[in-house]
Image (tube, rainbow, N blue to C red; front, top):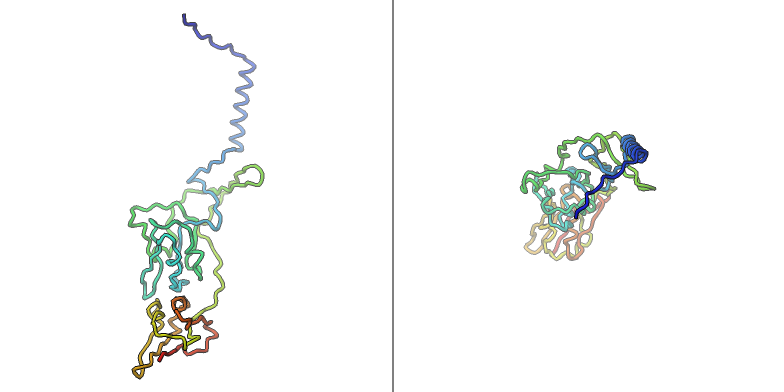
Length: 254
């Protein structure tokens, strides 16, 4: 035979204290919330300056050295011809945002940013050309509060009514203005690797007396990318500072 369940007896004092504690907790959360949730997109977390976000490009600083495309582990960087020069573009369907290209760029032509919430309309749009990397993309921002976590003692969230800059201002490395020159012309074997690898067509050659091949380096065209030096198998070429070079830029192979 089933027994009916009796309703519990209400303790008035216990009930009053229970409701009072609930009201106190709600009031504390209203005055000083203990939640660690960021109310995105109205709030945005403060990110470190070395955050690996969308990559921007400074065309004027690029020396066309191809180093970014060579070092990319995902083969996401392709060089495009613009104004008779080669500039990098990024395929974000392949990019893993390792920023090896940014770290290896000798002139800081590739710049990091804190832009990570990017939406592309199609896979084709994810192939970003050099001209599309120059300017900061248009970002619709709804945030008016920046949130920063403090882990010194207990986890504390600090909110400030400021908009964080998403483009990082970095100091450009101090790099001497290099040009390529023939330090050991007697080593030249006329392989023409330097001629074929120069992205600026700064190295040329001509045949004289049917037996002498004369190579010339136009230091006005040379950007100091030093690709020819890396390609030279006999260490004929060497990097010289432009303000100290005293060579004519010619070397010959008989």
